[in-house]
Image (cartoon, rainbow, N blue to C red; front, side, top):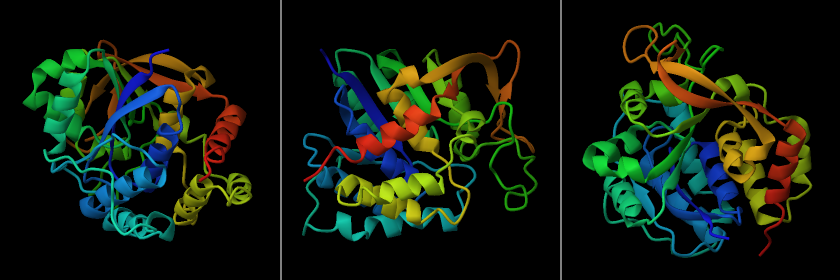
Amino acid sequence: MAKQPVLMVHDGGVDDYLSTVLLFTMQHVRVLGIAVTPADCYIEPAVSATRKILDLMGVQGVTVARSNVRGVNPFPRIFRRDAFTIDHLPILNQREEIRTPLAKQDAPQFIADVLRAENEPVTILETGPLTTVAAALDLAPDIESKIKELVWMGGALNVMGNVDPIMEGGQDRTAEWNVYWDPFAAARVWATKIPIIICPLDLTNHVPVTSDFMKQLARQYKYPLSDFAGQCYALVVHQDYFFWDVLTTAYIGHPEYFTLKEYETEIITTGKSQGRTLVKAGGRKIRALDTVDLNKFYAYILESWRKWLV
């Protein structure tokens, strides 16, 4: 059976790295490349950590590309600095040099080149803001027809967003961070005919990284991926932390665990609601992950991270 071609774009947050790990455990997926957006990270350590993860897993033939795009509303520095910590974890630094290649071209051109080279439509898995994807579409409008669907962690439909109004100048708490970082890029992608599936806060709010999950993960420490995941989550369990990107990625692995619901939506690009994914009659039709079988999801993640042992 032919493998599903997937191009990943992430933005260097803690769960982006764990999504990367999860994606490469999927036997039915052929990963075409990874582009890193400088949003929830500092770009140099984020690209470095991503390449080291692929080295750790023994991945060959996959290139990582660096994006130089900029958003409108920067992530807080306290979020972004986690990229430095991940890049320096001992488990990722057992080799003298990084073997996974770095693309010579900037990520938007890399995306265009990869999509043009494919003979079948490609799924884009996006776990960060849409800026790099939007830049690729501006650079090469013809690649729109090469995209089978966009699976994106982004948006808050019928729940509050996760942008702090105090930190962000009075934002009205309707925006989710991946949209808020660059709502204009989201609106650009919304203007295409690409089928869009989002994993919104409406669902991720119900899928936390729990103490029980961490204990189960700790029992799998002898497996390198479980050890790596445990170290990553240990950085963030002092706060409310959810399976934002990992849940989105799990849809690629087991779509049957989820139900989806169709919405008509609009991206708000200005004002106090900047970054809001507004449910609006007559708006752009998308599908959103609506429910997930929690027991199957948690079991799937734990199984995926213990089945690989060097």
